Image (tube, rainbow, N blue to C red; front, side):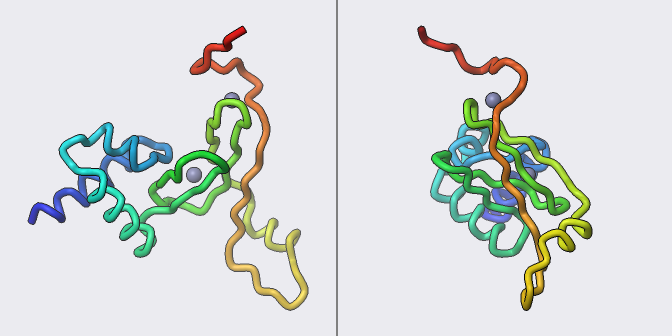
Length: 124
Ligand SMILES: [Zn+2]
Ligand SMILES: [Zn+2]
């Protein structure tokens, strides 16, 4: 079935990319699949838990393949996203809230790359 094939193609792309992609980026890589179909599939994957949807400020939402739970650091200048893991068991203890059972912790930190931004040309 064609629909199923598209689903797999989208998942494969996210699998290979090793970083989160927006629907527009997926569409650019897979122009044969129309954008509406891509959006619909992405939302389905989010519902089933195959993908995680991430919203970082003003950026378009990006989707990443759910591997292990992890956290994100975002550069305020270039919107680069770094994926990192922490000792979540330890975190859960640190964050303990009275009368609240923490299931998952997802941290988003913001800062600046220490290396020069290569993708950006500064206009003076
Ligand atoms: Zn940066
Ligand atoms: Zn991530």
